[in-house]
Figure 1: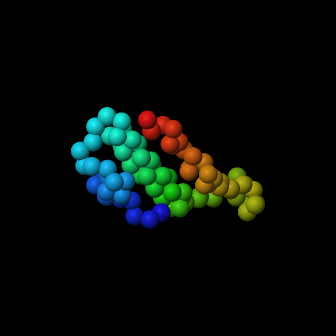
Figure 2: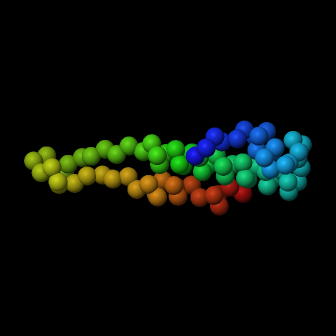
Figure 3: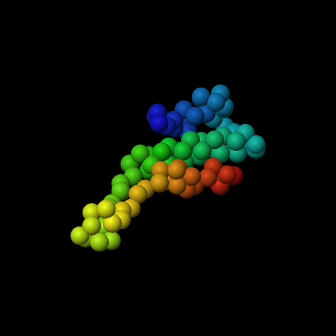
Length: 82
């Protein structure tokens, strides 16, 4: 993901004044939070590490753990941001 804007940069990109109130303030905070949650989840998914463990040390194909990228990306739904 590209550079995440600062709060001030976000307001400028959205053509919003630095002094907000009411619904405009809530909108701006929600959209800014969504940007950062998405970036954090993308970073987690892109940097996830997988450890492999064998259930039988004599059988290299016995079992392993695999990280499901989608489970990370959907771990914190945007609907939680209200």
